[in-house]
Image (cartoon, rainbow, N blue to C red; front, side, top):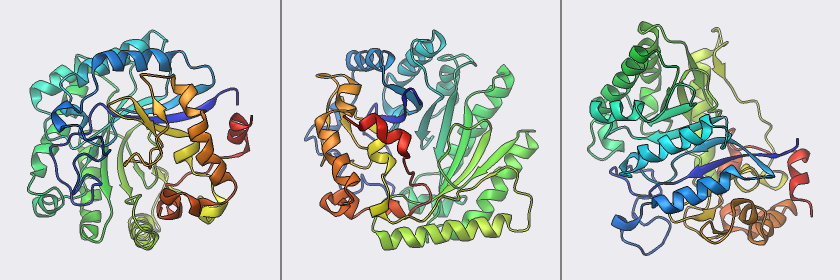
Length: 359
């Protein structure tokens, strides 16, 4: 491997128009603890361009997926589609290389007019994925999880995007309908699956079903997942719910379009987590964090002051990786309290990755 393969979270804003009960924003809308009013927590274009220029010139890192979101609703940024258009231009010119760009959205503000504008921002060579956070199939459950919001508005947006994509003869964007399986919505999982299976089928669209993160998707996807943060005991329960769902849906059935996970069951002290080694988050203000470090307890550096590779391979990041490599995970609060190590979504690194961090 000539370059380190890396996926990044890239946050235009941490603002959101929803109040979902399981979101880390609950109880603290300033989730990164910046002390800055919400009206000012939007990435400015000058910083965005500087970061794009920096990412285009990396020598040791090759980007896999750019998740163009983190904490917050990305479409709330008034220049989000301008940013998308800029990334698409850099991609088509070969200046910025990556496998896919993914936007995770609640979909609530995707009006027909905004959808038309969205399709004007890229051409069909641009591998864009729109992942919709749904987690319910009925208005009652959706309103409970999303605190009074309406699910049919989002369903209409998804339908309009598919219709527009078909009219234009486009391959992209691909659609992911996501369902985080929890006790509160577990009774709706099979109905959710049947609804979206029918939705794609009647439109003549091929689709996949996923139970793990693998978002370099060639087709539209129905995605069931766990809530990958919280205490280990809760994680065990969440994993059992997803495993049980997979058995119910696909046991004794044809599985050719099911993306499963057969990762081993190492304990946290045997694992080097991709959160520190093969991924990173860029906040709206240019600060970089490990993707698990929403609260900024392990600051790595700021892209207005240093380059991405300088920060990613820098002393702050290496300090925490060294602790993890030594097996002393309990010395890092985030690792000690993390339940994601138990999840099949939690990735492992291999020896080829370690070599990039050897002095």
